[in-house]
Image (cartoon, rainbow, N blue to C red; front, side):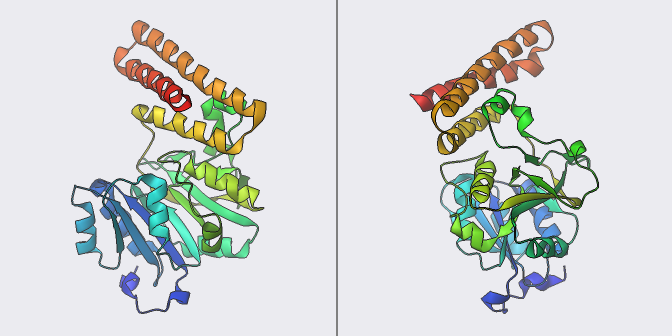
Amino acid sequence: MSDGLSGSAQPANAVRLSILLVNYNGRQYLESCLESIQRFASVGTQVILEDNASTDGSVEAAEANHPWVEVVRSDRNLGFSKGNNLAGKSARGKFVLLLNTDAQLLEPLEPILDWLEKHSETGALTINMLDGNKVPRACTGRFPSPLRLAFLRTMLISPATFGAQEMYDVDWVQGSFLLMRADLWRALNGLDESYFMYAEDVDLCKRIHDAGFGCAFLPKYSYLHWGGFSTDRFPDQVRSLANYVDLHMKGLRRLLSHAILLAGCLLRAALFRLIAALRSREIYGPKAAASWQGFVALMKRNA
């Protein structure tokens, strides 16, 4: 971009897009993220960086190198949902883009905004997510069900599933790049703050669908996302899925889903311990430990 992001003299109603960034000790990636925004976001784009009490100098570097960024500070780590909601309170754009700080834009955002503006039936969208090797990764999925909770990978839709169409309808889109109308964001009160990390994007998309809108995947456009799931975060993932079950399921379906999550953690722990003993303790030992910790986390949550 031209240094157009610094053109803050424009009136509030002239802002088309507000980009929300949540930072927690993200100096390793934040500079590249902001540089990509500076290159590919249009003049007048509002960029709001919410910082969760980082101690690595990342927010200070952002302020020094990119004075067009609006910084909102928290004195503690609020997590992804509360952090985005805090940043969103200052959003003036017609559209809101949730963008991870370990992500990089690879092309101009205007055509993507144009698409969403022309399709009023769509509530939120994402685009093709590439990893650090420029390989497409799953960034869309299907809503949780008892069967899908038994086999968590079935919640994700493989990129190989999609062809050459301009758009695909999906249940949910990943929060590392999630574009939606600001009025819908406000009507839904942003992300549900009962989620600290994981599944808050699935929950938001469920509420978008319940409000009568769809979610879309546009494979023609791409962004890069360095981050990924690590084994030690598995307990956080299953805890968040249990929260989703409580919020969006009822009766027998809800009880069955909770039982499947618990049983799944136990079976994973037993299976990975067996494989660790037979093959590789270094690889499968941590997976077994994380699965057991997930079971413990669910038991404490349900106590």
